[in-house]
Image (tube, rainbow, N blue to C red):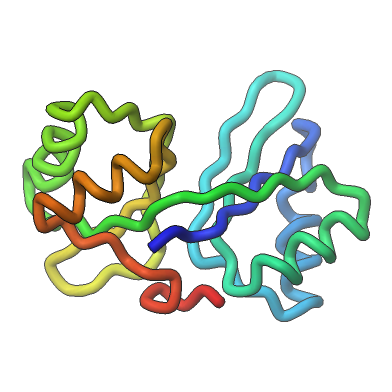
Amino acid sequence: MYIDQISIFLENRAGRILDITEIFGENNINIRALSLADTSDFGILRMIVDDVKRAVDVLKGKGFIVKQSKVVAVEVPDRPGGLASVLRVLAEKQINVEYMYAFFEQPKDKALLIFRFEDTDQAVQVLEKHGIPVLKKQTIGVR
């Protein structure tokens, strides 16, 4: 039900994202989803990868600062208002979304989104109670 996400803290300069993707390529680690947020000095690269433990070990071994956290993958109707229908359910229960981003693969007529919640357990309970599919990591190709 929860998916492990890695967050990599990078100085904001040309080639740093390339460094990460080359390291993953050399170590046969597949990126499933990603999001990049930046400021003038640094960025946070959030990723879902197929082998979290190996990714963390390899990156730390190369001197990167890496944090692991729990996120939730949610199947959302791929139609106008689909995301709003999911967010309405969460807002009605006062569940705060800290951030979210889209997933690379998409089943027909569905969009997959990664959510980070202030209260993940409560969010999952509310989503499931309202029939909103919360995906398991195996469903999206994560070990």
